[in-house]
Length: 477
Image 1 (cartoon, rainbow, N blue to C red):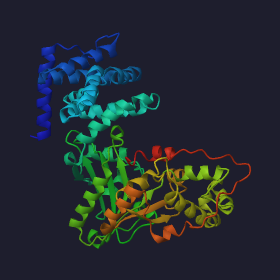
Image 2: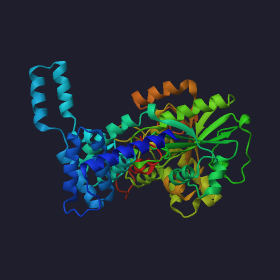
Image 3: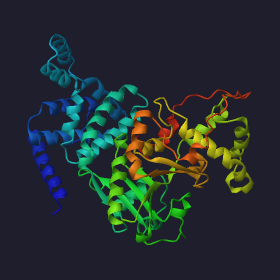
Image 4: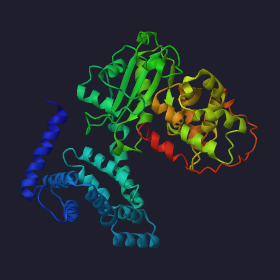
């Protein structure tokens, strides 16, 4: 018998016994004050000591949550904020005691008193069968509600804190995804693909079945058939400059043993409720290790990556009254981007190539958000993992999405194994973008100061928000 299935059945049995002991009503029962009832059940769960009764209570609460409409879910999240915060009286006593005697014992009491009660509540809710999956879905709702009620950030911080422990690398399982993987998981790969759309089973087969293709995913024991994040890998003889080289239907395949380069061309986070919980850095490192063991000839590990925020940033720079990134000549050349189907005209692409690639180099090397980091979320991910910005590829992806987000631009990040730690430290400590000399030469060191452009409004500082939203499905940063 499958161990996971046996354990789940056992938990379900214990939960049912607890439900009968507590005589819990059905979630479908009429309840005028449904959220108030939920709050009382949560209080009971926090004071519960029995394992069976606790699991039954947790299941009942989560079942009620799943039956709630959007308004009741909103009200429950507000209740978590207002009713299940720290015990204020205990916290005030702990603060005063620490001020009087800052001993380790007083510090421990202060730490425990400061913990919101909802953290323990979430821990206990996780005891329910399928509790982890339901809580991940609950946070997905919470992330949307935060936009209208910023105070819910405190509740989200507690979810993120607990998820950071529950989904740490020690609990994750790396599994290869192939054409022989069960169909229900393959369907999820099609659904979750966030970088290069998979149109159906035939296209998925082209990405998984050939000898020169690999796919790997992280799974969690509580979400055993639902990937957390996956990466698609192409085995090639050289670093590609266009996505068609990897995804074209008529491309020529090679034997895996002939490959010298592994190209990570799509990395997709699958669970919106786990946004901000980083798996990608562990994923790439583990996949590199596995590929090197399988194929010792591999000596180059690189990406072909999207640039999700470039077009929005470039539009703001073009509309700004002044711009450090663009000269008047650049602005004139970039005007062709406003014309429909410009990428289909050779004279237009030839005339704008230089201006686009130079602007992209500035975007990566000089543009910063309010934290002093690169604007691009994909860049933050790979540079933070120790990669080097290796090459900017003009019109590398002609899909509608890529044209809208980046005017077709893609970039290669190079994972040079002997330099990864040095590059990571440069980025982590100094926000330094390690880039190949060819990329650095695209941004002159003596660029002239700002030149006002008559009739254009000043650009607003959006701190990369658009890029962050566009890239959120690909990377947690």
